[in-house]
Length: 556
Image 1 (spheres, rainbow, N blue to C red):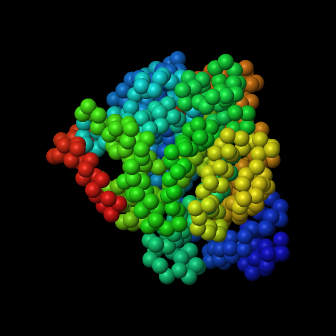
Image 2 (cartoon, rainbow, N blue to C red):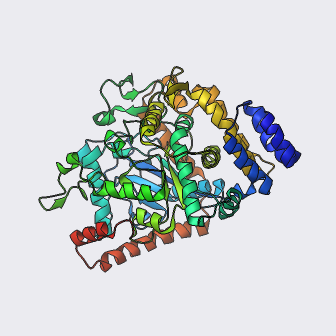
Image 3 (cartoon, rainbow, N blue to C red):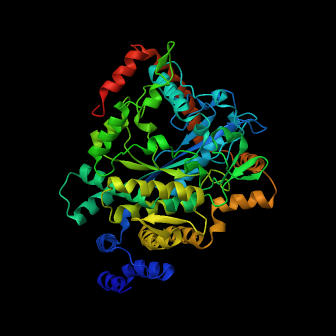
């Protein structure tokens, strides 16, 4: 507390309240000296307002299902345009797995409005179909009957389809029907200018920004179990997923598997945390090393995948037989990103311009929110990401990875267990005690994000999430299990009822304004024309196209 007193005296009573309210709320937990110094410099510079106005966007996946809850076998609805080129509505692994993409905007309410509008535009084009409202899938057929996404006859469209075929061979198609939310975030330009000057850094702006984002990402890997606990909403699943379910998983009822204290089975070794990729060591210490390690994984043979074959009887099974087919196959709860030029590989984009934003990939669809998340979660995630950037972030050594991966997967499977312990520098500690050290820093960032506003929305969001640490029964994962038990219904039955309810919710909304509706209709029309143009412009065969793609390398 004495350290905060000195900051209050140094920066004045108004700015000092940013710190004192944080401490009074969460207790006198000592923040690291580095974090306090950095936060103090931001407060002294401009009350931390350079943190405000970052850009955020959402990518949300949802399965299309039949009226009786089975995975849709129908093609991508024509009224939604081309899945290859529509900037708002595409598909992920399966033809039935829609992905809604919002533009990057400067406020959380704008991103949620855009996501809501896309839902509202989409529903009338689904006919009798519904959108599935949880991360774990609906009733799904055997692997071979799960349809792959189709993107037309162009070389790029074929490549996207074959890549997904390869994912099916490598990991099983059932696992790829799991849906999630991606939260894309970048700090504002004014922050980087101020922050580099305060840090006394003389690197280029691009180098400084990339190094800082990598520090954020390393800390996210250290502390990301906290988001699994707070936002995880997949503790149960339909037994039709049994083909991908480990033996011995408990039954909640005759139609439902579950884990009593799970937060996010989606993010466990049942879902995207798989043993094959766990062997990959992709460095997060320098951008050059990250690019080199990803490039090496794309070029290094994997014996298990060689057995699958690449082109068998004239048909591609996968793009290659290496550790990774392309960069996007590497699944991580957070990724460094840059918007790529047409035809540019992700690593080439990073090498060209450095890290532009981060993509958080560990947020489940929340069945209790019609669009899958709410502003409180978005505000908390933003404050948490900035905390990860400002906190000391030493390089990750080879010996650190096992501990980080174990904390991640075990929190996903048993994070609400009172006896659960995280590993911290080789020692055991409770999730709640470690979280109690992190939350004051997140709250301090929230105070800066609220500076100048009477609403204090970010502070309220942190308070709401902090309450879940004291009351695990109020987490989304526990609430879902409680609803299944209280209503004596299966996971499938509860999710079906919610899917119908969400459809009715969007149907009851005020119709989209004419200009918004027109913009989505124009995107549909333009996307279909653009796909035709891409297909007409192909001048080489697919084999040559694929060889040229890999030959381009990360340097583009």
